[in-house]
Image 1 (cartoon, rainbow, N blue to C red):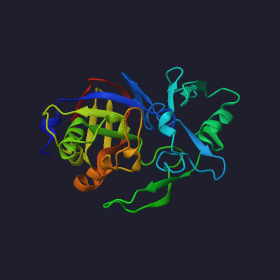
Image 2: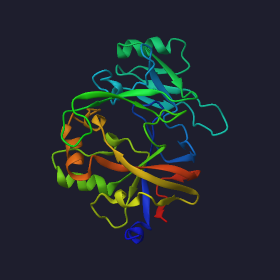
Image 3: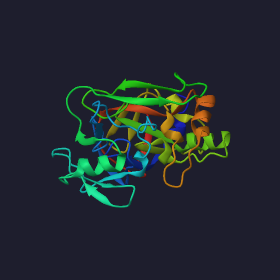
Length: 275
């Protein structure tokens, strides 16, 4: 493949895990990868008590404050053990742990809707997505339902990769926008040795990626973006131009999805190669 030589000595520059779906997550120096992705990623989610749907920032009209919450594991998760509790920082600066007896009431009060926190159960669950009125999207100014993969809280696939080359290309196309990693919520951010500014991941689809010594990923398809990329978080402002730029120049795609062929441990600065 044409880009194989260019990516032969690319490397991992950051790793991210999101213990609770649609909340802010945690940056890691190393993590175990299993068939279910980065260990502990999207292990928990909130569920709307009124309709049983998974709570997601994809519908900010219903859930406008999810990015004001941050979840981190109290202790590192282990593959052979039950998921440890998480610590959730609330918008008012207080914290609560997932084993607190009044957790659901506290979260419901903070969100102004009744919710429960839980782990993925057997079977499929659904969630809602708001589509802004923007050219290039499948729907415009509409809310649709979608089904998550069975037994998980993932939207589509268990691993999401993004290159700094893509972020740099988007910055060229829309200099006013702040194209930061946190807007796109990837698991693995890769820096290409070539230093190019391009949608490099597009050419990875259908190929196998090796990360570090053991982990092998099958890149299954592009990652189509949604309204979440435009939402404010921390010091990042609301910016519809982020999504509009992706729609105009790369079919709304930023990054790629992957399945895990072989697990293991990955670390920052690990080499990344395309087979």
